[in-house]
Image (cartoon, rainbow over all chains, first blue to last red; front, side, top):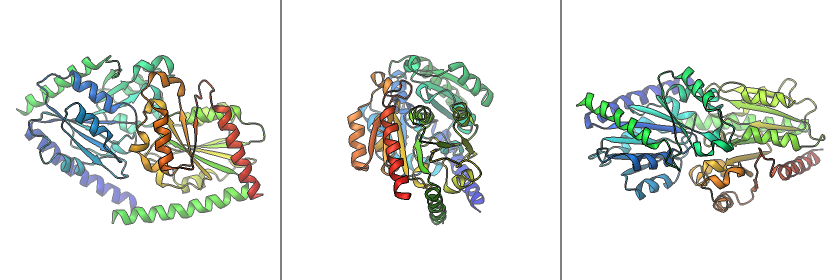
Length: 221
Length: 221
């Protein structure tokens, strides 16, 4: 019974996600779903990317958190239009939350929407939000065994960003092991390394993301 | 309907947790539920603690992971009896898994059971496993805003261990902010700081844990 209910919920989510995807395409908005553990550096990565992206990119953000609006405040401070979702205990965003949050004025004059999911390496894996691209973030201090231990979320992401490379000298982390594990689970995935605090690796990601967005908008135009 | 079902599940879990608690008490086993984000250092903390605990403490471990047995292998290498639970996608351990894993020979001649939950700051919060003590682990690289963003799991823990203090110089982390936030949510909680890799802070935690265990076993004797 429980499994059937979960499957029904997932199916309902998939339908709303498909509607979101159609709507985002018709509005000309490229949508990225950013997932990763609590504290892996998702918000700092966003701040760093927005600092790099050129003026052709007009971005907005949806922040997902259990409670509070710390991350929305951070986006606000750098002038990025943002809606904060509080899931009040739920461990992931779902497509209906994104539908609600992206109504109203958030997507006006916007061509890139970044959705920062609840910090969690498990639950967001099964929930399509209607995004065009899912990026999973793994930080060096989390250790190099995470892909083996939490395979679903890595398998279902098209990009891996390894963050906090500045603390690599102080951590046990074999980058080549992580790249090998990712290649096994998601052979097509792009992999980047970045220290958002020191700015290393950000230009490459910003350039790549802009190219992805151009391709998407070009094919939709 | 969904919420009712979840409440029923939680109630069933609470009943099994209460049975676990009675059984652990009758066996003279002090049980700790260790929770925290993926990669916050739970397993390394366990390795460090076992290295410190005296021979009066006879420990066993239950490891909870989505997939794989990396952590169980680590316990095995240091000679700690261990059972690995694979939740196969589920984002937390529950009391029935612990009941099943602690049957058989695991608790023979054991007086301390450490349960390492699935790495997750959300889902394990609501699931009593029948433990006597819940320890939440927060690592320095995760950032000092986690208690505000994931309040439930901190509120429901009796101890906070701040790990990876060796990378404090390279991270944005205000220890006093975290201690203040924890005091607000869980005024009675003990708070420790540790670098398990460098061994700093481990003797204090081991001593404190042994004292907690003695008190528990004394009152049950």
